[in-house]
Length: 103
Image (cartoon, rainbow, N blue to C red; front, side, top):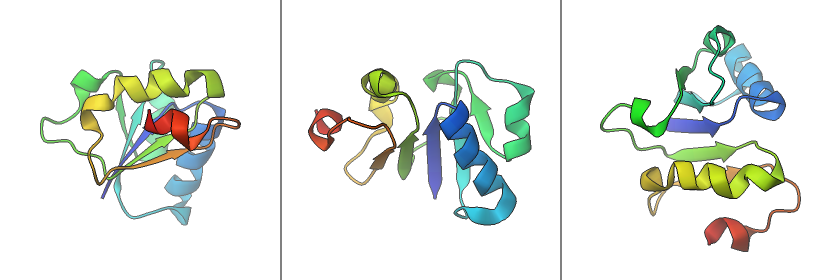
């Protein structure tokens, strides 16, 4: 399973930290964040700065969007080419409807 986390700020970092401590899925986890820092290495994820940094055959099974509500749409647009019919999108943004994410 491939999981892509868009954003490694407070919420994304908390998820990554929990998963790195054994509380998460057994998967290859990628973190897409514009502020890639060596701190991401501690989460045992593959940090990437842009969609161009993914392996050529990369297809995430799940995309987690732990961003602020106003950044959800922009985050999805950054990885639109990776979203397939069987890709689960998970958002933790308050007030963003499923309809907005689907659109």
